[in-house]
Amino acid sequence: MSELPERPLLVIVTGLSGAGKSTAIKALEDLSFFCIDNLPFELVEQAVDKILQSDWYHPKRIALGMDVRDKSFVNGFRGLRERLASKLEIDLLFLTASDEVLTERFSTTRRKHPLLDSGGELLAAIRREAVALAPIEQQADVSFDSTTWSPHFLARKIEERYSAHKIGRHLHVTITSFGFKHGMLKPADTIFDVRFLRNPYFDPQLKERTGVDPAVAAYVFADPLAPTFLEKLVDLHHFLFPEYYKEGKHYFRIGIGCTGGKHRSVAMAEKLALELAALRIPQVLISVTHRDIHVGL
Image 1 (cartoon, one colour):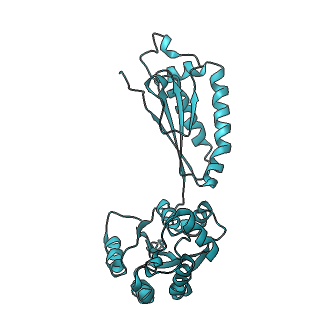
Image 2 (cartoon, rainbow, N blue to C red; image 1 turned 45 degrees about the horizontal axis):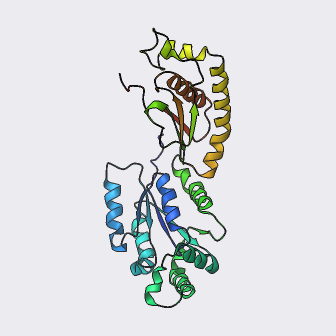
Image 3 (tube, rainbow, N blue to C red; image 1 turned 135 degrees about the horizontal axis):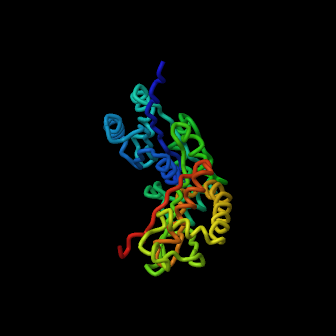
């Protein structure tokens, strides 16, 4: 018997201003949710139906950011949830933090609290918002108190809760060969210079070929320094990638440079990508590109 298809998921992200709604929305975007922030309450059902009926967005994972500025949200959420329950799973995520921390965050960022429009001091606005959203907090499926949390930690908690519905975040590693004479590789997180290796450019039979040619790669790795250097690169990144992933990185770019970007850097980049991919480091995806391999050809 085949498994039933997974039901669409709608996450409503709300809570006190300054408690981390923007961070939560970004984290859900990284988990491939279709995210809309501050959608008017009256348009929620229409927007959800449009996404569910579409053939351009799969899987059906939707996140909506809503707050106290939309008065209809507080009064109408319970009815909305009941109406949508037959169509998808709904998870209400409520974010909160202490008055002191929220006050400090608004003071640091110099953002205006949404309820200051009605007058008064910042602390009073924070407390009015907490009172207004109390009925929503009571309906929450999960409440995260970000008082002592960094944005990175909040993002990880979001990932822990919602990545079970889909493959979670990955660290996307791109290894790019390039030639220094054509300019520095940008952007790049690390750059390694392989101009110390023997150069196939000076071999008439290899000069017009590139590092993806087995003969050129064999020439480069016949240099005793090449396998040693490769081994050290693999060991270094085998150690680093899990740490970068835990720190919250989504992308990491490695540059391998030689003089022209056709021979040594290409051969090293190809071999490094194969070796790292073979390690099957969890949550790490490896790809390789060659910026200057065809320059001048």
